[in-house]
Length: 511
Figure 1 (cartoon, rainbow, N blue to C red):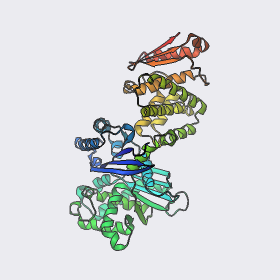
Figure 2: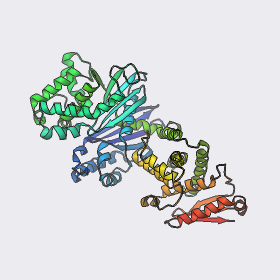
Figure 3: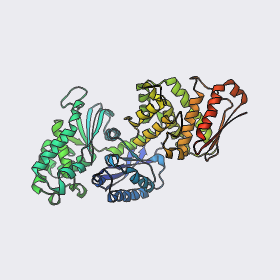
Figure 4: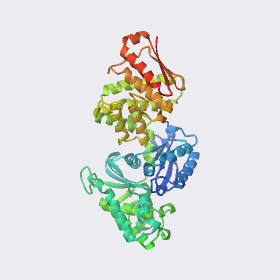
């Protein structure tokens, strides 16, 4: 990316929506603007796990305002990610369809572990380069992420269904604080989080230990601000540091107030008042469970990790998703030579299809080619389970994999390419075949698999592939080619018949 390029990240959290705009300055990210709105979608889930109309409208209104600031940004400059509330919401597609139209950019619903990876990436990017062992904790509205790593490399990461909004709604209804409620909330949070002890060991000198604990974003930032305003200066605790004594002091303040509406504390923002009880109970549970003495308030967060990802995605070799594809291929014993062969041919075919129309900008075409190549690398991944229906097994693996760098939607789209790379097309979701970008990728992959069926380099000389820009594709091959490769020619004509049952027309001609 050119020096001076502006990048933007939007974090659709359970409590707040955040927009961070940064400028690339010689490989570093320099903040240009930061916007935050308290949307509190996390308490807008009804008993059937549907977002209420009011919660959706709050989100849409916020994204409409963000869109005004993002006018003129290109798609490659913006990444919007949604977390736990939209992972849970059964009617998330209803919200997302309008949200994306208002924002003008795709919104990616990410898995809990992908959220954890981005949090660690954002936190460590804002820290000095170091080999220290780091434990990072992020208490959000409906989920809490814990990540253990060294330097900038995470070793363990996971997401747990406990957060400030969810715990405030469950244990501090009407904003009432009591000692019994805090005790119950802390015990419940520890019960959810205790499985982390299998990976993170307090005071351990081995892989499960840490040198420094960092807290990111929401609850940790709010508690840190309150302690810096009143407790830390009087007790000699350094700024942006949370201690056990500080948490005890804050708990005492909340119990004396008895109610969120009567809470008077310097440093607490109005949007945090309603969820401070739930957030504090979860934070105290983390301190007790992991036997922490102190926590540093980190400057980096999820949105900063998303910005770093935008930089890394410009080049295939630094794209975390490419590394995840390689890891999956290795784990499931993919035939690397065949996968690379199919990938090269598929990319050649896709280039042939789009070159006459200039349908895609160069950077957009590069991203399409990269994603097509991922599908080629993984199209036989299901063979590790069974050769019979291996394309179905492969699609299942991808739909259920935790693959760093990928969103849930990206993995599903990749799974659909793997599912559709052979056999009948009716098994694909109907809307997929209405998307020309997906269809051209799928057709390129299917033709590449046919041409490489003998598991050797195919003869592509004389093959001509053209697209009319609508829903018709033509493949021409010389008569001599058909005589030299009769099985390939027959399979190509069979492929044309397979597409005849869709809205697309594929014509194969010899001569």
